[in-house]
Length: 500
Image (cartoon, rainbow, N blue to C red):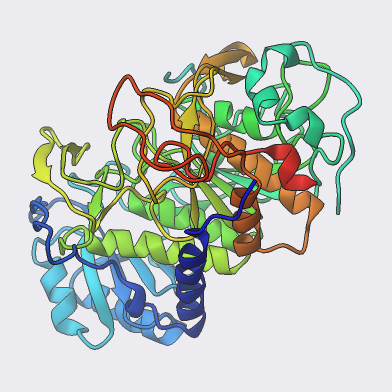
């Protein structure tokens, strides 16, 4: 157990960003470019031709209602439609069918607009939502009937019983969840936002765990939409699996989650094609802050770029919008855990990438640099989680990086809830590791309700179990010390130590 030396500058950046958002001056923390000795990242031109419905973020220089109204008027004057406004952070989501939209907005409101950029490399598949002319409230949107099918691979009470498949949950034993449950199983006053593909509302291990009033869908062009059909899963059970790890009920059925005494909100940010666009993520983080969610889990990266580059004017605006939403929700008291990624990539040594944009017919092989971020996991104030296997070694697929990973958690062959047959199944990925950390943060908040995000992150990392470097079968070798290294960060998360 130790206090990480790199927690101090990390916390300082978090505090500075929060203070700046609080003052309404958002431009000062915009994404920066690469260092002087690095190459510029490869441009990826995004075509927004006349006649195609394209989606944009428009970022105000100052975050307040008056300035956001000016941005809205500029959007409309440039022939666009305001889909959703977030005056708290000075971000407007807009649609336009004009190729000149970006330059037209800047020409009309250069004193109010900091940046304009596309959010996708393709047309908006869901179209412009109904009710988009009333951007200051939740949109009614185009509700889709939910269908389900199997997709891709104050203080609570102590535990008093076991569930049938609890013995198969080696991951819970590894991070000392049973011992933590002797202190708390989570408080019903604590809510975890599961930003994902939706939580199955009928699963026997989850049906009583969902806070339906706080659940929301964000895939209708980035407008928040309520109602079960907006936040239930449609084409993927990824979110259902994640939710089981966090909070499956102790009910004599199936498995038990890390925080079964807490509540979960289903925040759907994955569309039916499997994409998480920036406007969906912004909506998810803003709703988490607005609805008082204490923790969020983020087992995804924001599409269509695996790495969004701050030195590219077409990519930086969307990255900035997501950054603002993360920072604002953190300021409201929400702490965020996120998957490090599954490319066996060294996040501390970025050189090339060939997977983006992933919604295009042909991704571009490109040079990247330190301005290029996997978001949200590499944003300040977000806990970045790598994955370990049953032997405690880094999972072969897990991203890594000295100074990039905060903590590690189990992520290989994890048993949890799935949609198919309302059953249980195994999945692997840093997507499965991150909810272990979100669950532990939930227990921490339950045991220490006055703690804020900065304190929770500091204690989570300080109480992690120091883990020496292991060998790798894929990707960059481990560097660092048992106290802090590129594979495990500050160590393996420890639920019991975190709540003692």
